[in-house]
Image (cartoon, rainbow, N blue to C red; front, side, top):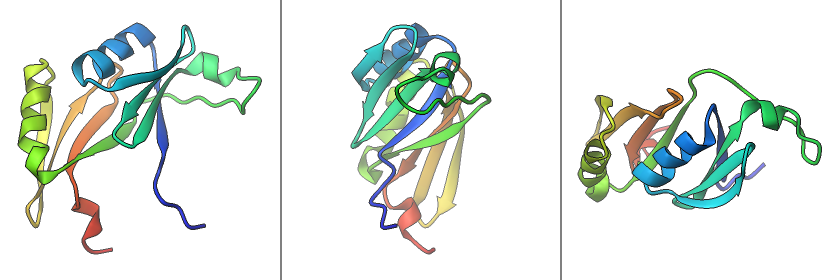
Length: 132
């Protein structure tokens, strides 16, 4: 299989309005799809973030059902030049940064949580391109 990238990823949330207020309102991700009581989808760069109500997705009839629970993790990539600006924007939105980590080689990342306690990370472009 010759995968180009992960096109979309999914989080399960408790409240779509709260989810939309965070990802669209605070992080400024564009809403690209929404079904009340079921899901809201966001554009995240060239990828898509799918946010579902787990119970609704578990009862899907057209597509295979899916669901999950717990504090999941995903990372968003920004250029090295935009890293500090992005961190400042997250802090200015009133979002608490839990930790910043120095990965060596000039690469940093920082961690914060969404309203459902999923662990979100912002990483610098190129971090995973070095080494194997």
